[in-house]
Amino acid sequence: MPVPNDLTLEAQHVFIDVTDANGIIRNMPSFVIRTDQASIIALEPGASVTERARVFWSSNGFAFEKPGHFVVEVRVLWSIAGIPVGVKSAQHVWVNFPQTQLDNDAAAELLHPEVGKYVALGGDANHLPEAVVRLSRVMGVSEETDDRAAPRAAGRTATERPKALRGFKDLVLPGQRVERSRGPVRAPEDVPVSVASAVEKRGSGGRAAAAHASGGGGNSGKSTRNRTR
Image (cartoon, rainbow, N blue to C red):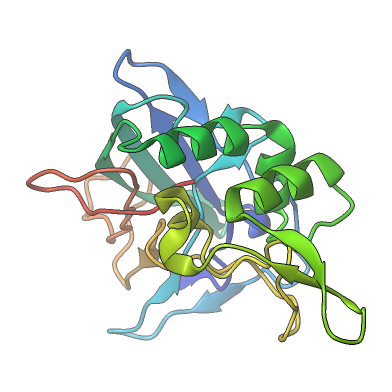
Protein backbone atom coordinates (compact mmCIF):
# COMPACT_ATOMS: atom_id res chain seq x y z
CA MET A 1 0.00 0.00 0.00
CA PRO A 2 1.51 3.40 -0.96
CA VAL A 3 2.00 5.65 2.08
CA PRO A 4 4.14 8.70 2.98
CA ASN A 5 7.64 7.81 4.16
CA ASP A 6 7.93 10.95 6.32
CA LEU A 7 5.28 11.71 8.93
CA THR A 8 6.93 14.74 10.49
CA LEU A 9 4.89 17.93 10.51
CA GLU A 10 7.60 19.53 8.38
CA ALA A 11 6.90 17.09 5.54
CA GLN A 12 3.34 18.44 5.21
CA HIS A 13 1.48 15.13 5.26
CA VAL A 14 0.49 15.37 8.93
CA PHE A 15 -1.83 17.99 10.38
CA ILE A 16 -2.72 18.59 14.03
CA ASP A 17 -5.78 20.40 15.40
CA VAL A 18 -6.38 21.26 19.06
CA THR A 19 -9.96 21.86 20.22
CA ASP A 20 -10.55 23.51 23.59
CA ALA A 21 -13.47 23.08 26.00
CA ASN A 22 -15.42 25.84 24.21
CA GLY A 23 -15.20 24.02 20.88
CA ILE A 24 -12.66 26.47 19.41
CA ILE A 25 -10.37 24.65 16.98
CA ARG A 26 -6.76 25.73 16.58
CA ASN A 27 -4.69 24.31 13.75
CA MET A 28 -1.05 23.70 14.66
CA PRO A 29 0.92 23.96 11.39
CA SER A 30 4.62 23.29 11.26
CA PHE A 31 6.80 26.37 11.79
CA VAL A 32 9.36 24.82 9.41
CA ILE A 33 8.61 23.24 6.03
CA ARG A 34 10.95 20.49 4.83
CA THR A 35 9.63 18.29 2.02
CA ASP A 36 12.82 17.36 0.15
CA GLN A 37 12.98 13.95 1.84
CA ALA A 38 9.25 13.23 1.60
CA SER A 39 8.02 10.62 -0.85
CA ILE A 40 5.48 7.85 -1.21
CA ILE A 41 6.69 4.32 -0.45
CA ALA A 42 5.13 0.87 -0.63
CA LEU A 43 4.17 -0.31 2.85
CA GLU A 44 4.59 -4.04 3.26
CA PRO A 45 1.88 -6.12 5.00
CA GLY A 46 2.23 -5.82 8.77
CA ALA A 47 4.65 -2.87 8.51
CA SER A 48 4.03 0.68 9.74
CA VAL A 49 5.48 4.19 9.55
CA THR A 50 5.73 6.01 12.87
CA GLU A 51 6.68 9.55 13.89
CA ARG A 52 6.36 11.88 16.90
CA ALA A 53 5.62 15.59 17.20
CA ARG A 54 5.82 18.12 20.01
CA VAL A 55 2.53 19.99 20.53
CA PHE A 56 3.43 23.33 22.12
CA TRP A 57 3.37 26.35 19.79
CA SER A 58 2.74 27.17 16.13
CA SER A 59 2.24 30.31 14.07
CA ASN A 60 -1.37 30.17 15.32
CA GLY A 61 -0.32 30.41 18.96
CA PHE A 62 0.05 28.01 21.87
CA ALA A 63 -1.77 24.70 21.89
CA PHE A 64 -2.68 24.83 25.59
CA GLU A 65 -2.94 28.42 26.81
CA LYS A 66 -5.04 27.64 29.87
CA PRO A 67 -5.95 24.65 32.03
CA GLY A 68 -8.88 22.48 31.04
CA HIS A 69 -10.03 19.83 28.60
CA PHE A 70 -8.69 19.65 25.05
CA VAL A 71 -8.97 17.27 22.12
CA VAL A 72 -5.88 16.76 19.96
CA GLU A 73 -6.67 15.39 16.51
CA VAL A 74 -4.01 14.13 14.10
CA ARG A 75 -4.74 13.71 10.39
CA VAL A 76 -2.45 12.09 7.83
CA LEU A 77 -3.31 13.01 4.23
CA TRP A 78 -1.82 11.92 0.90
CA SER A 79 -2.98 10.70 -2.49
CA ILE A 80 -2.77 7.47 -4.46
CA ALA A 81 -3.02 7.83 -8.23
CA GLY A 82 -4.65 11.21 -7.73
CA ILE A 83 -7.22 9.89 -5.25
CA PRO A 84 -7.15 11.61 -1.80
CA VAL A 85 -6.48 9.21 1.07
CA GLY A 86 -6.34 9.90 4.78
CA VAL A 87 -6.42 8.54 8.31
CA LYS A 88 -7.07 10.34 11.57
CA SER A 89 -7.33 9.83 15.30
CA ALA A 90 -8.01 11.99 18.34
CA GLN A 91 -6.94 11.98 21.98
CA HIS A 92 -8.51 13.73 24.98
CA VAL A 93 -6.11 15.79 27.07
CA TRP A 94 -6.52 17.45 30.47
CA VAL A 95 -4.20 20.33 31.33
CA ASN A 96 -3.71 21.01 35.05
CA PHE A 97 -3.28 24.28 36.89
CA PRO A 98 0.28 25.01 38.11
CA GLN A 99 0.76 23.20 41.43
CA THR A 100 3.52 25.39 42.89
CA GLN A 101 4.72 28.99 42.67
CA LEU A 102 7.75 27.72 40.76
CA ASP A 103 5.50 26.14 38.14
CA ASN A 104 3.32 29.25 37.98
CA ASP A 105 6.32 31.51 37.40
CA ALA A 106 7.63 29.09 34.77
CA ALA A 107 4.33 29.19 32.87
CA ALA A 108 4.48 32.99 32.73
CA GLU A 109 7.98 32.79 31.26
CA LEU A 110 7.36 29.96 28.80
CA LEU A 111 4.08 31.17 27.29
CA HIS A 112 5.84 33.72 25.10
CA PRO A 113 6.01 33.60 21.26
CA GLU A 114 9.80 33.76 21.21
CA VAL A 115 9.98 30.69 23.46
CA GLY A 116 7.46 29.03 21.16
CA LYS A 117 9.72 29.69 18.16
CA TYR A 118 12.74 28.38 20.07
CA VAL A 119 10.92 25.12 20.75
CA ALA A 120 9.50 24.88 17.22
CA LEU A 121 13.03 25.15 15.82
CA GLY A 122 14.17 22.22 17.93
CA GLY A 123 16.17 24.25 20.43
CA ASP A 124 19.67 25.74 20.19
CA ALA A 125 18.11 28.89 18.69
CA ASN A 126 20.41 31.43 20.30
CA HIS A 127 19.44 34.04 17.71
CA LEU A 128 16.22 34.47 19.72
CA PRO A 129 17.55 36.45 22.72
CA GLU A 130 14.20 36.87 24.48
CA ALA A 131 13.68 33.10 24.42
CA VAL A 132 17.21 32.46 25.71
CA VAL A 133 16.71 34.91 28.60
CA ARG A 134 13.33 33.44 29.57
CA LEU A 135 14.47 29.82 29.34
CA SER A 136 17.61 30.65 31.30
CA ARG A 137 15.49 32.14 34.07
CA VAL A 138 13.28 29.06 34.16
CA MET A 139 16.28 26.76 34.24
CA GLY A 140 18.03 28.94 36.79
CA VAL A 141 21.00 29.26 34.44
CA SER A 142 23.60 31.92 35.18
CA GLU A 143 27.10 32.46 33.86
CA GLU A 144 29.96 31.66 36.21
CA THR A 145 33.70 31.41 35.76
CA ASP A 146 35.89 28.41 36.50
CA ASP A 147 39.37 28.35 38.03
CA ARG A 148 40.83 29.55 34.75
CA ALA A 149 38.37 32.47 34.56
CA ALA A 150 36.61 30.80 31.62
CA PRO A 151 32.85 31.38 31.47
CA ARG A 152 30.55 28.44 32.02
CA ALA A 153 26.82 27.94 32.55
CA ALA A 154 25.46 26.84 35.91
CA GLY A 155 21.89 26.38 37.05
CA ARG A 156 19.27 24.30 38.81
CA THR A 157 19.55 20.54 38.79
CA ALA A 158 16.89 18.48 37.01
CA THR A 159 15.00 17.88 40.27
CA GLU A 160 14.96 21.61 41.08
CA ARG A 161 13.50 22.70 37.75
CA PRO A 162 9.80 23.35 37.05
CA LYS A 163 7.75 20.40 35.86
CA ALA A 164 6.99 22.22 32.60
CA LEU A 165 10.55 21.63 31.42
CA ARG A 166 9.85 17.90 31.22
CA GLY A 167 8.07 18.68 27.96
CA PHE A 168 11.29 20.12 26.53
CA LYS A 169 13.20 16.85 26.63
CA ASP A 170 15.61 16.40 23.69
CA LEU A 171 15.77 20.17 23.08
CA VAL A 172 19.12 21.93 23.29
CA LEU A 173 18.38 24.53 25.99
CA PRO A 174 20.50 27.50 27.14
CA GLY A 175 23.61 26.37 28.98
CA GLN A 176 23.63 22.94 27.35
CA ARG A 177 26.23 21.73 24.89
CA VAL A 178 25.33 20.36 21.49
CA GLU A 179 26.76 16.84 21.48
CA ARG A 180 24.93 15.48 18.46
CA SER A 181 24.13 16.65 14.97
CA ARG A 182 20.88 18.52 14.52
CA GLY A 183 18.09 16.62 12.78
CA PRO A 184 14.31 16.54 12.60
CA VAL A 185 12.58 17.30 15.88
CA ARG A 186 12.04 14.17 17.95
CA ALA A 187 9.74 14.39 20.97
CA PRO A 188 9.07 11.18 22.91
CA GLU A 189 5.61 10.92 24.47
CA ASP A 190 4.17 13.85 22.56
CA VAL A 191 2.06 13.01 19.51
CA PRO A 192 2.92 9.58 18.08
CA VAL A 193 1.53 9.11 14.59
CA SER A 194 1.46 5.75 12.83
CA VAL A 195 0.01 4.55 9.57
CA ALA A 196 -0.76 0.85 9.30
CA SER A 197 -1.18 -1.15 6.13
CA ALA A 198 -4.96 -0.68 5.87
CA VAL A 199 -6.08 2.75 4.62
CA GLU A 200 -9.37 4.38 3.86
CA LYS A 201 -10.17 6.32 0.71
CA ARG A 202 -12.29 9.40 1.25
CA GLY A 203 -15.90 8.79 0.50
CA SER A 204 -15.59 5.00 0.79
CA GLY A 205 -16.77 2.76 3.57
CA GLY A 206 -13.48 0.92 4.04
CA ARG A 207 -11.71 0.58 7.34
CA ALA A 208 -9.23 3.26 8.30
CA ALA A 209 -5.71 2.61 9.41
CA ALA A 210 -4.71 3.54 12.92
CA ALA A 211 -3.21 6.96 13.50
CA HIS A 212 -2.58 7.54 17.17
CA ALA A 213 -2.14 10.87 18.94
CA SER A 214 -1.41 11.53 22.57
CA GLY A 215 -1.59 14.99 24.03
CA GLY A 216 -0.41 16.39 27.34
CA GLY A 217 -0.93 18.06 30.59
CA GLY A 218 -3.19 15.68 32.52
CA ASN A 219 -4.83 12.31 32.54
CA SER A 220 -8.16 10.55 32.65
CA GLY A 221 -9.48 7.03 32.26
CA LYS A 222 -8.78 6.86 28.54
CA SER A 223 -6.27 9.62 28.05
CA THR A 224 -2.53 9.23 27.62
CA ARG A 225 -0.40 11.49 29.75
CA ASN A 226 1.92 13.74 27.81
CA ARG A 227 4.34 16.56 28.33
CA THR A 228 3.32 19.74 26.51
CA ARG A 229 4.11 22.01 24.68
